[in-house]
Image (cartoon, rainbow, N blue to C red; front, side):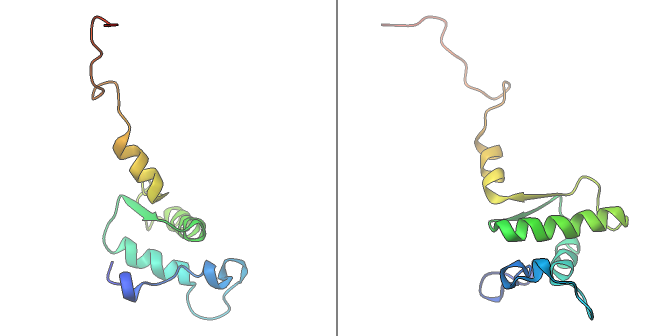
Length: 101
C-alpha cells in the first residue's frame, strides 16, 4: 500500500475513533480499506489489535455492499506466521519406522 512505514496511515482506533460516528467525510478505516482493496488482496493483515477490529468492520461492510471479495480475510500477522510454519499431514516429515534407544 502506498501509505506504509514512515508514511503509515492509522485505522483510527488509536485515536478513539472506534467509538465515534463520523458526521462529515469518510471514516478513517473506510479510507484505509479502500486503499487496500485497490490492490485486490486476498488477505489484509495487521499487527495491531485495534486495526484488526477496525479493518474487519470495514471489510465486512464492503462485503455486504458487494465491493469486496467474499473470501477476503483480515488477520493478525501472527496468524499468517502460524499458518506458514504449521505442518499439514501432506508436508509433515515422515517418522522413522523403528525407534532406537
